[in-house]
Length: 363
Image (cartoon, rainbow, N blue to C red; front, side, top):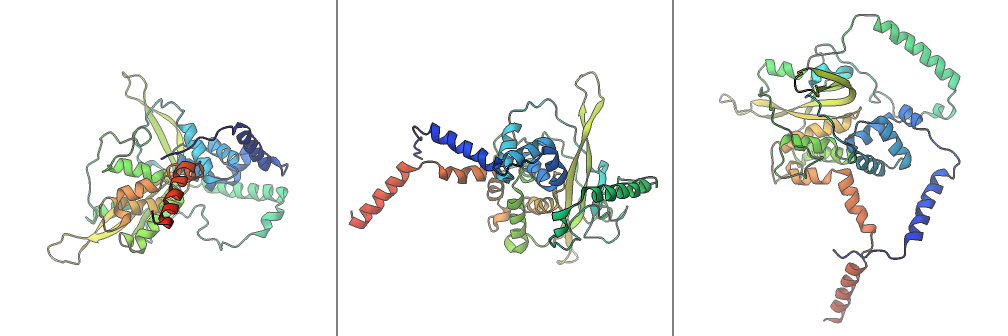
């Protein structure tokens, strides 16, 4: 492609950057990083997921710097991530150890430990709350104090935040297969270019850092008929996941706890035709898996749908084509390629104009 460098444009570029800063400051108000962290959790979680970096404060900074532009925030945070050294690899996590804050199943009414609704907008009316225009700080403090007192009372009651996995019920009844743990070294999409065919670790990494809207869109397309049949959410859980690393000393076998991250995990049950000799209508279930940083439930569900789709490659449906799915959901890749159209294309377009003029003349 013949791009032409812009010559003599340094002053114009600097003026453009100044204008950008003016647009951010002209209202003579600025938002604090702490305010973004406290009031825009969904946005922070989404940026961290797409940037593949669990750092709430840095995600909030990227949001402020980009003036709320999601694509720019993800681009900026992912660029920063590329400069960070990788000192350790964490041990494989066991999601049974998750400290649950929300846990539901749409497949079973009663599950071991019970359904835990937690914090969600699923049960709200989605009507504009005009009271937010006139919030009173003193009233908020009183409400918070009262709510915390109720929470403290509940904490005094014996309870557990760790629950068994719903999928184990199906395994116990022989409705899903049991697999041997795959302990092979996972493919690292942050250090190696994606290659096709991709193994499952590469697919899951690409899906979890995919643009939220793109992942949801393709998951929806699959459900509409461009892929698999209707899945069921076997279990959706949101909670804090403990992270451990191995001892840096080879002579020690201990593991060290370095903190916890909030994640959303989804296991979808997908009915597939069974191999029963007794009935052609027999059904088995396959598991579609999704996990992403923070509380990002719709994306995790869509990810689980696409995970199951990509386990069955097919040229008949675009959502079963791993190259189509994985190359088109990346926020930075897609944004960057489309944005490059704003760069000078004088030579290539003039060439097309010459061809068009010659065509009109019959040459």
